[in-house]
Image (cartoon, rainbow, N blue to C red; front, side, top):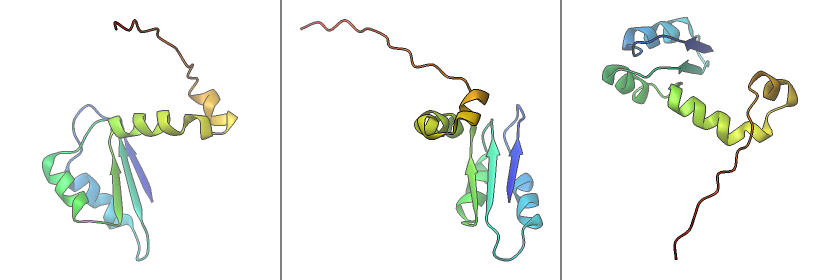
Length: 91
């Protein structure tokens, strides 16, 4: 099961517990947020191995890491362009 939240404030433990409450035996959960998790929510995720939490920073890192592997359909949804920046090396 997947739950996605886009909000300015950090995700609380009770919000993740609602995902767990909707899960059935044998389910795994993924909680994705563009913000972050409170300290208690992080502890809850650490103690609940059947739910994986991904915050906004990790989501961006994953998109960048696997962008070339995405199908054309999804790359059109997230149109990124490789940019090269020259660096002057002083020897």
